[in-house]
Image (cartoon, rainbow, N blue to C red; front, side):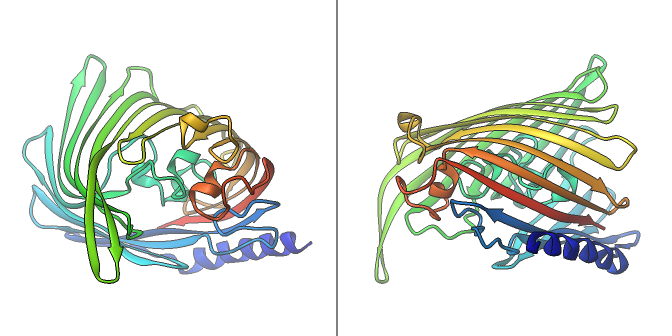
Length: 353
């Protein structure tokens, strides 16, 4: 009964957001935004601050500012806030070097896979919770970096190719006390096929970092190593179908751990408003211990989305989990103490303006 009351409250919130949402547009300046409010409930293992009592702390609100400097250059900035943080998410300037080539300089979202640049924009996603590899509990995806990027687009037959090349230093939003990031280099290539809605993507990066030890105000640097990442992605979005699948592998020289993750997700929209969806998900944070439920997790998800209007949608889903690698990675459950088979429920209101 309490869950039903909370979900009803989320419906009310959705209509309140609809009444107050706005966007500002002018020739040289625009302000847009997005956000979500979720209710999470975990029957056994604590994860994303959710336990058997449930939590409403999974929420955010972001404002995106763009300012046109001239016909070739524009400034982008995003402010992001949630229940426990407020930060400058990214801020950069882009410059159109040619019809096909764009340069970016500043704090930039890292171009990895299908979700990383929109990982916070739940409205644009199919599910309430992202695939395991994108969730913040596990250190696979670097959300942003300070540096420079070049994006080159060109045709290929009846399709197109987009090349992203970037370099700089990872932004550590959580403020790690054990690792200092030194150098990040990476790239991504996206092939949009002649088949409408079908694309393939390869992403890779190498992040050089150094271990640090802090005693009082004294910081001592130690061993350096690289975290090497690679990912293959497939995306099909056409004729009311939205199908995605990705495989990622990461090697960490400092921790001597190899992790991998993959998922298959499908949703179908009917009557222009309803979208049932399913996802099969797997992750191991340490391949050497992949038979230990503290270091692997399989998750099968089933849910339903409802589009209230062009700016607001709702989703309700359940996750049946085997293994608890994510609660261990997020340090909410100690290795060896969690329950192997557990369920997690999520409901969310997502909006954009």
